[in-house]
Length: 155
Image 1 (cartoon, one colour):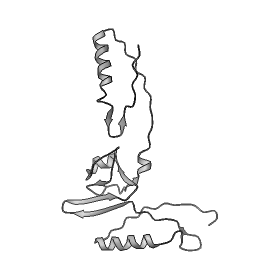
Image 2 (image 1 turned 90 degrees about the horizontal axis):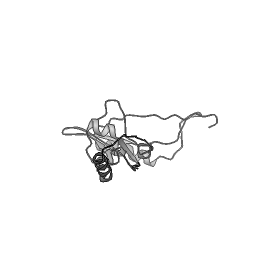
Image 3 (image 1 turned 135 degrees about the horizontal axis):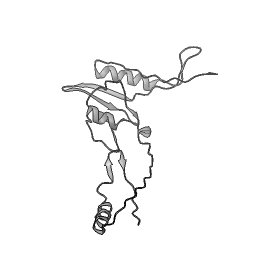
């Protein structure tokens, strides 16, 4: 298609049973893409990112391969698996804002920041305490998404 624009759509589908979902997934996987819908519309790809199922206690929303929930969703809705590197694969509710799982590669983007802190210390004991504390390293993981990777102490 010439002079085409690419659109991305998020579609919420409610299926009353697992069989219906599996049948839909099978049909999607069997479809060859791109799929020409009419003279001006071409469907290039369909990707299932999130599957939510009813449980005895509410809902459980799981991510398909290569997708995950961001840390904020894992905390807000309760992770039903482990939180690792600031992401989880399952949450215990349907997000109120309609959000869905995101590409893991986009969630794991890393940024580096460098901070310089100048301390005016004259007490040798305080300097030694600070040096030992920093060398201990127990604080290097501040939370699941922030890590201190290096500290230089100079005089």
